[in-house]
Length: 537
Image (cartoon, rainbow, N blue to C red; front, side, top):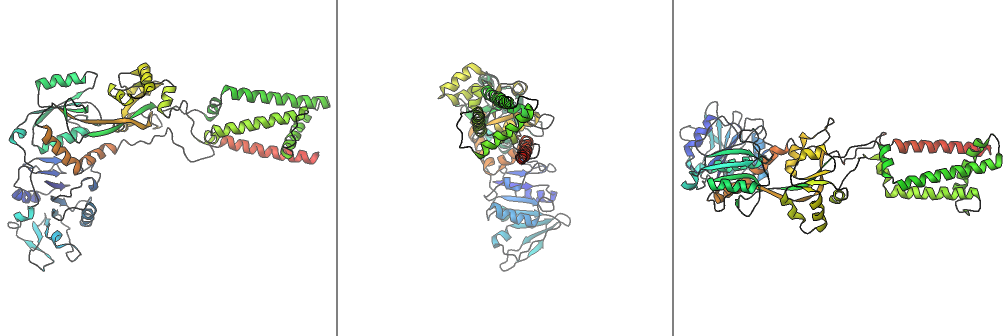
């Protein structure tokens, strides 16, 4: 099975481990570069280790744990054991100068017997004595402490000699964060997983990287397979024509669009109303003004026409408020009231249908596309690989749209630089690269539409019938089951989660309600003026 070493491991512990580590086919997972094992080992990066909950091992295993580190102490260790539900047969070797352990606590006898404690300063090794009835730990001689029965939980994985001597060349296509480069600090999700699995198989390999996917990728793979039967290709979509590793990395592909430009609210309000709306409002306003002016001018015909015009406006408003049921358009004044009522009704209905409150308080964007239907209606040019077309086989309308507006390449830079562009993109890759597409205000220049287009599978591809396929799959399954895939994935998620502000709505402030506040103040002023006019009349 697996011997797991967390954090730095003292040389003393390594010597004890080697004395009883008899199976060359077993392997260890270590989090330090200070020591070397003479058997296959996986190394993990402590600095980016996101937590012990990602490493879940419930089968019989052996752990070496450094208790002196800030990351883990004896209390946390016990809590971790209960949380993850480790097997009662798991063995623990605890290392530290400040070790203390209350064997009077309510712990099972089997768990107490599975513990060994080492002080690297004075070379004392503490282990619970075997005699029944004893509940304490005692110091023993360093030469006799390692009982082989203590490590009975370690088991090995048999690897054939043919597999161990297999020559492997790993070709990987450049596709961050799945495959980056062999010598980088972060090599890529798929590349790290395959490297771990090959380490466990004790297989030597060489890497040929930074190949780029293109329409002739199948021809490239076939030509290399003819020359090198042991080749492995990483970062290739699943295909039935080859052997491929399982479990594979799956991802959701989304439509990726340019984030719409935010525009001033007043200009947005002007744009969202159609020309018919503005025509009705303009004609209604002109008609009302002319009617009021004609009525007042006919009655006064003097220099106080404007004053009487304003007074007449208040009278009409008062009449409309107090007697809305008396609306028989038999005179010019009543016609004016009728026009006012119709325009107000039309205006309120328009506000309701267009969610005017959101327009006044939310963010306003120019040409905001929220669905695939919006993409087709606005005739966006789409760029994505041919294999995505299979998802739309039953949608004749979409296929006709793609036939006219789809290009065969996938170019994120074009989507950022030009309008009316969209591309199909896997979600993990998009979030990993999103930090490269930010404006001066750290606002994402790209965004994705939900729901996803389809599920994309990324994996390693081997020649059909390759004898390495089954052993490699077995190791990958073990790594996934024991949480190492989640651990690797967490490293690439830690720095790429950027909040998409394109469709976000902030808390309301005075800046968001300038227009409603202005209308409210104007209404108060008009009400005060109407009140004084009422008193004068």
